[in-house]
Length: 427
Ligand code: ADP
Ligand code: MG
Image 1 (tube, rainbow, N blue to C red):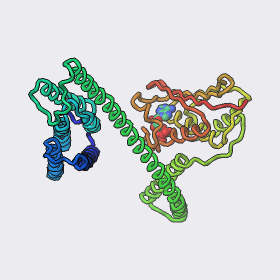
Image 2: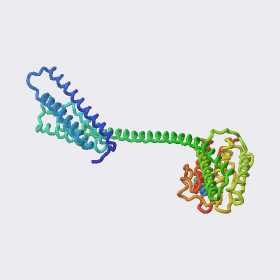
Image 3: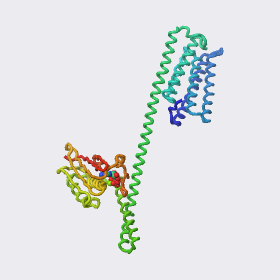
Image 4: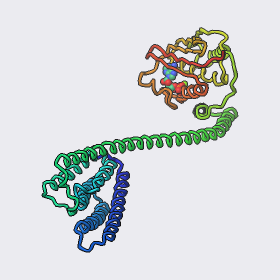
């Protein structure tokens, strides 16, 4: 047997429900039988009703048996199959007791089939439909040929001919399979949407947790920054005021260098986790670009090592916080310069795209990005540098996101990298 339901809890719930439903139905059957019994004021013993009482008692005993089996750890799917198969037998007995061919209870098979589709889905419910068809067909055939004698002789099927009997059997069987098909289809759809829902809930919870963790981490980073600054400041003062021998001097330098690194990491992290909301202003791209490049050319990362050329267009305006724009440019320029081992070039080209976007292309002649790294470079903390924080591109991405901009990276190993920024311009 296949195992269509992997979630045992779910299956157990359904089995419990089925057992409850069966007992409930049996009580109902018992009640209506007693009612009929009294109404008819039957004097002579009625074998049909007695047989029904027997079935009712049998179902109660079976229900207790199922509960005991479940209690003592019977395999859930096996138990479900046992119950459903015995249900088809019980239904056959009820139909036999109430007139076989003329019984109005053949719909009970359909209840069993619907239940089986909830428990076993497509294959299992088809199997139960087949089992019900065989039992029903066999019973009616045996009755037709006079082998099986129902109790209720008054409404014998002798009046129907073979064609009518066959017709009824076939129609009933088709109904069984149709119900099995449709209800298992519904059950499967319900199962897959439930799965999707659970996956979505899981996702939302994870995102929530991440956001919470991010907030906590940002709070922590913020709290560490001030004591770190006092520490670095105090050591700096000690270093200037006291005399150390060279070994101690070296240790002092290490402390200051590492404090510096920590402080950069904290600021970068804070910028990434809580980018300041920013004061949006309109400005000329060219102005801020030239300003940033001037600063950058004096920076230690660039000085005398990297030559920068530009190809800018004037009078293009964008609307964002200029501080953010500078930060974006700075991070990208820094990456470009850091990728260049000795001497190299950075070229910056500006383009107007359909008067809607301004495109800024920063091309370097650095070592490039390995194809297996290209998908990770935007992940926070992903770095290939010994002292990198891996936050530069994450910050760029985060900042651009808030202004509806985009970033594209293309790279050839040992030839260089081209980073393309696209930002909406102001007309
Ligand atoms: P960091 O610079 O601290 O390593 P980033 O987020 O700025 O962090 O960059 C992540 C990684 O992406 C870098 O470690 C580097 O491997 C790669 N990378 C980014 N820009 C370039 C570039 N222009 N050339 C080569 N590699 C780059
Ligand atoms: Mg960087």
